[in-house]
Image (cartoon, rainbow, N blue to C red; front, top):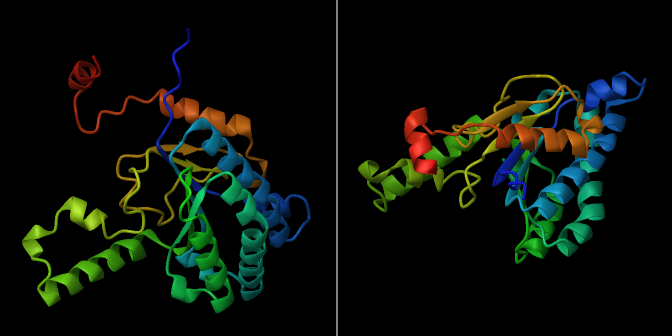
Length: 245
């Protein structure tokens, strides 16, 4: 019997290339973002069916606020429409939905939709889906540092008690498995301020596919890449082999 493929417990995705996909077809960037929703659904369904525990999608970065106001507005409208349209199906699939990022930057209307989606799916026991909106890895580290500083100032925490585990518990992805695999589409090969702490030991997979063109086969290739990696976490190859044996 063939050995089952080793799957990542937690997958993170930088969904890049919507704008270039649209430009190549003479369409607006908004049309590209809408087209990318099909790949989002596919990733959620496949990860859920295959037993991946957590999926974190980079939907809108803290730097994306610098884009033209018209594009930002259309994206915010698209987010609201997508939540309204998809939350019932996500709930049916037992997906637990959570949003990470600087929420106060979002409109009151979008914040309300986010809160409602989180509440509706909070008890679900399936795939844990995180959508990063108005999120930046540096922001995440800073807000964690601020939280711990407040605890120290109040006397609830001593500085010498701040460990990696304690710091990690103050980050946006606290309580989730460490990110095993990062997938970035669109042929770019950088982190773009995404999950800077959590990606410390992740395998990095870069796909030339533009996000709307990302298919099940592309996802399977990313999983095959991950399964073929020797993940030693600082050990030598000999040590790693002994542990596996």
